[in-house]
Image (cartoon, rainbow, N blue to C red):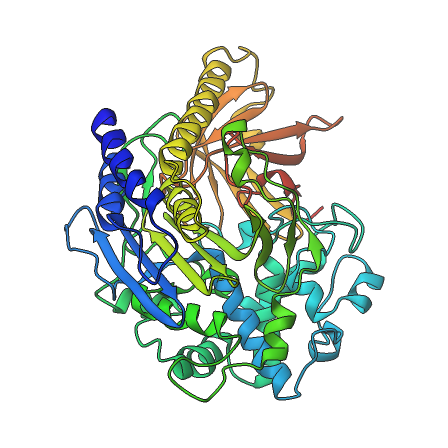
Amino acid sequence: MLKQSLYAFTSLALVLAAASASAAPPPGFAQRVEQLRKEFGVPGVAITIVEDGKVTLAQGWGVRDISTNRPVDADTIFFTGSTGKAFTNAALATLVDEGKIEWDDKVIDHMPDFRMWDPWVTREMTIRDLLVHRSGLGLGEGDLLFLPNSTLSRKETVRRIRYLKPATSFRSGYAYDNILYMAAGQLIEEVSGETWEKYIHDHVFGPLGMKNSTDSDAEFQANPNHARPHSRSTGPIHGLGTQTPLDENATIAQNAAPAGGLAISANDMGRWLLTQLGRGKIPGSDKRLFSEEQSTQMWTGVVPTPIRQFPAEFAVTNPNFSLYALGCSISDYRGAKVVSHDGAVLGSQATVALLPQKNVGIFIAANSEDGEIILGLRDELLDYYLGQPATPWAEKFHNWKLGRLNAAAKQVQTAEAKPAKIGPSLPLGNYVGDYNDPWYGTIKVRQSGKNLAVEFPHSTGMEGPLTHYQYDTFKTNPALKWVEPAYISFSIGADGKVDRVTMKPVSPNADFSWDYQDLLFTPAGK
């Protein structure tokens, strides 16, 4: 299979090397996508390319659900993850154009109940600060308020931000978060009088003619042409094993939708890419979604972001600079400016990349966590439109990812093969109780037969039995198999009773959104 794959790519590469960027997708590109999809075991893929004001490709490959084999087409909606942050910024831009807000307004002037951990930061936090990941919160801090799901309202989730302890000082550096985008969504509601969902539907999707796109769980499930997320959760760690469909009801928690809860089709994404490249002008119309001034604001880098540390074989694709703007990254690729954002959530991944100088926009989505097909095809397309030599980036990403996953699996298996045969220190009944973390809330540890079990009341699917690991540390066994398992450690005080509980992911490769390490539980009522 590998030899056949490389032969096919070499043939394609000869064609691409002889071609300059033109108003058409690369020759043989559709076959290339299908070859990679099958080789990597990706259920479905959707891709949109726009060039010089026209959609030149909007197509689907594979299936929406491996259990039904219904095909993907250009109207199949895929979860797009954090690429949706740009839509929340576009909604805010319309409010700026209407004079209802300014980017540098203080958040508390529009949401008087908004609080950060520090009173001074609360007073100084601007709308722009909500959007550029410089608040001082740690990487992904607070994400367990929506992962794997949540019964919390958005307003209650935003209220709990005040309990998140900062990792750094305010505006001193970059750390990606989602929870402040939830706050931005709540701000839209309090300024406009409409929920974020209704505002996006009426003021963004509506004017752009994005008829199939959804911004709520209910709408996603109601659309029969949706791509069901898939995950690899049957191996030694998350990311390895066979492809498995997620539960049909597995959708992003609605409180987090402003951070990445949209589902969009290839056809609809063409409208969005053209609007972005048109600096706010609605395609096929003299009207605007937002002004060119706001487009400039959204594409102006604010916070330097770390340059990705990929192996030497990826060196030519590494940027020389990278900045986070309002819901997008501004960087360079082989010397050309790129406006982009990746997204990953709930067994789905996506990317958006714009080449303003070439007037080209790219969207790629998959209903799986096999992001190498997305990253690889994106870079192959960027190479094509920039007239660079063709390189099999997808295979390179695939091999690198498998190497990292296998190394992480070996690390976990080695650690769990020889745990210290010590503990637990107390009879199991002494660990039973309710334990509270200020921002997350209360977990319940209960005895279940001869073992312990844990419940996470507002996060269904994380509950399950605890198996003893070593000392006073147990391992969670979540009911939802795609949830990252964690070690849960009980600290025993001088009085011989549990005085605190901490957690950390089992896998060293766990996504940053499983921020167990930020939790600190103490016995409820103390």
